[in-house]
Length: 412
Ligand SMILES: [Zn+2]
Image (tube, rainbow, N blue to C red; front, side, top):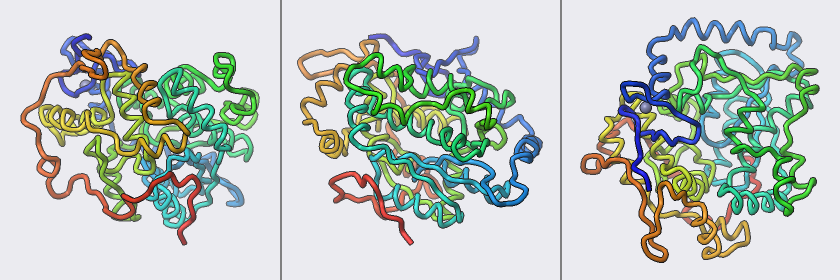
């Protein structure tokens, strides 16, 4: 096990899977790019965005102006708010059903299309294929989320080609926000290459076929990125709003809760109540696998983001990380039930993916993990964010829900 070297300002380790560099002052590339948020002229950048989208407005109003990928969580409300209410575009919303749906996510998605008066297209890949792929990617590279990410990143592009609507509007760029892979001023756009290398851990749909004999053409074709000649024929491009708006998920979510009724919930493994409330696994099993493989989990992402925005000190962030990152999973039984495996067999597979750089088995079934330095005495999140902080609705948190809602009803 190695000691983990981290940024002096935020909590990110140099082993961050998206790649991160420390400068001579020990400050990471993500923190440096974050500093641009207080330096750039955001009014000017917004005008750049207005110029960029102008050619995509449908003159007749008889077709969609753009495609917006959404879920029942994350930044979806804020993105649609900007696209529809601020830019005045008529978007086609698209969502990929990842099957790990919470009642809250189903509700948020139904409310989203009502609040913003938008059409929505839902992709339901047949569950047998999804399960076959999930078993394979879990076993081979410790990911239960490969089909979710592959689907979420490809369905909007396929829809752009099929409907002949070239502009896709995404929220923030993860590589920019977390590790400063690009400057805001690069105005980086969606690419096949980034999707493969970072979103999909280096494995496109067709790679799964050539690597694993457990999958067939029938399983993977829905996850295939459209060919270049189709993308060029339609002129498909995907832009990131985070290049044109000073991105602040906490403030944005709170605005969307007030204005449009976005609903939130508490999680066992992080203090942020806003992200990924649509999924049972993202903050649960997927989060644990992230920690097994990379030595840190989502609470480090959240704490680093809040430190950069000046709402947490580094010590408070460290304390929150040590308070949350080892918390036990709450929804493993639902995953085992859905995939058809037992918990012991699953745990055996999970242990195979503990990265020896961070984990060491000290006795059968007992694991030690490298820790970044400890913070001050743990704070209670209510103290840290007292009053107007991260608010959780108690509605629809579904303590009694025994299974995923694989396909949800639309609320009126
Ligand atoms: Zn940093």
